Length: 550
Image (cartoon, rainbow, N blue to C red; front, side):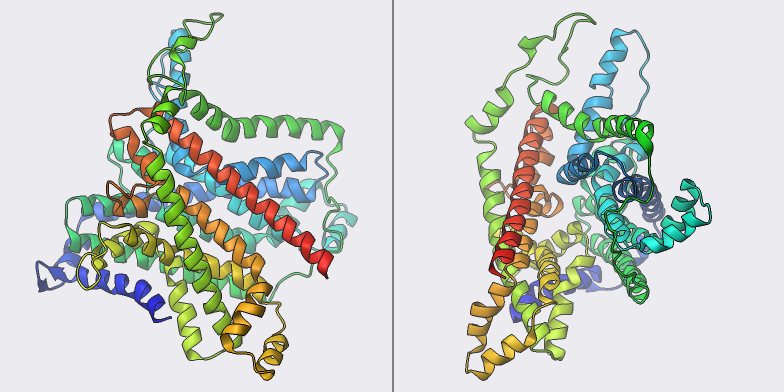
């Protein structure tokens, strides 16, 4: 396990050292440069504003849908689950691309305005656009968090309020929402942390208008080869992430003592909508999900068949589509000319290798922590979970600085990407394995040891079999992340180590347009959807297997 400590702490310590390194001289000049630069504080304020907007949108959207799903007698609850799931599958960068395609100056909507002789003034490059794209990907986190909390609310509390004549609005705003505050706070910190760490959407929608957030500020500093300034900015961002993480943990522990008992009437609706309101809500939600999920995918799909972005797709209203402008050419270029094969195979290889190693490392760490308790196992768990507080772009920068000199010169190879993926994935696998290992009976392991079984035999023969659900779900989750991950692979790739994330982000600048970006986006969405559905079916299969064997 010394290797775990090495791959986690070595890059972070190198990043810290680089912040004091001014052309071989150790000093604090970079700190002075960064914290006296007004652009640093402008990027920070922009980041805070973006976080606030995203937080508000995700709370309203995710919270409202969760309340409708659990606490009303809405007739089409499965529809909510399906579309929330689809929003989670689509990466935020693809939402940004879809927004440019539909709302941009050369987008579909502007062309409709052109045919109507209307002026089109919408600017897709703005805070609001970036916030919407991030929110559409992140509101499912709020939805699932609030939904799970709602299932814990005791119906007796709500029935008591109803008995004294409380209205439906009073029940929602004065009874249900106050009981949901711990879930709103915990999911809110998750949204804040992920918004802070996001690079791709900010680079796509904010940089073109000269608006910087912390991640793009760091990337710009790196591009100018100011490594010491880059290191200082990176450490500042790590500090902010750690503060958010610690505060969220403190609030979570504080609310653990006030956990509600599980209601015996979890599926019993609290609010009766009536037939008219059910139909009205169905209409509203159908329009909502069309706008935030179906329309972005249709836009991306349709654009992927364009021969060249900017061509007309109809001559006027009442006229047929210009089918000669549409073709499978973009997909043929991707597959026949080999543009997609290397990134696709690399994503499978890097993601699969890192996922297997991460799952194994995580299982050993959790095993040692749970069943061989001691200061070393506790320290090992803490160190391995440290990267969960560090944004992906900072992990990539730290790896680039650390692994480019002897004795570990991995820069420019696939090894550096795999190592950084392992650092990123291990905390996620630990969380999945911990969730299933908490209920294991320690007596089983003690009995096996008493009968003379070796430590490794207990681990392989008993422990792995007991945690297989968490192990496999952790593997699939991180494997899926590798297909959508952009910052790490973008900073560390070479010509032969491109991934799907790099291809998706960079293909537009490589003599191709939005139509080719759309084709890659469709492939990424389909792969993500297949892996997610596979995860769901496998979990159901394992659950049925457990029920039949018990």
